[in-house]
Image 1 (tube, helix red, strand yellow):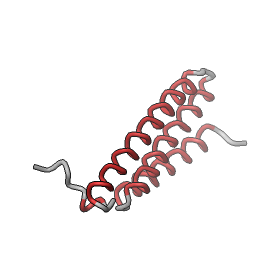
Image 2 (cartoon, one colour):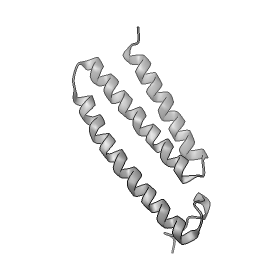
Image 3 (cartoon, rainbow, N blue to C red):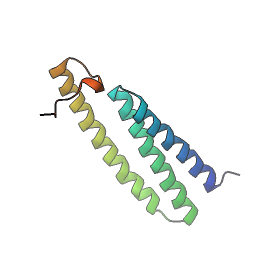
Image 4 (spheres, one colour):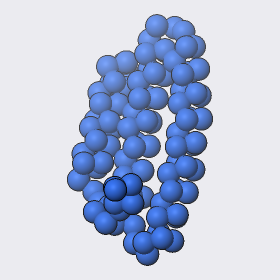
Length: 100
């Protein structure tokens, strides 16, 4: 039988994979996917703990987190497109538009 601990371990593995991807990768699209992986890991733990305690609060938090994730992706991709139009590259190392 699958218990809450199984879900929490899976959530920790997914979150760790996302953190490693953010720290290692240089492509902003892949970095956004890793951030989404981290958010989904947190969502999985919210749902698992909500199920464990028999409350729907975890599912309510997941709905709000999904709304924030959708806004984050749309704004982030808009910024990437604007930087690509200005610099002709999306390499993270060359994105220093905010420096004085």
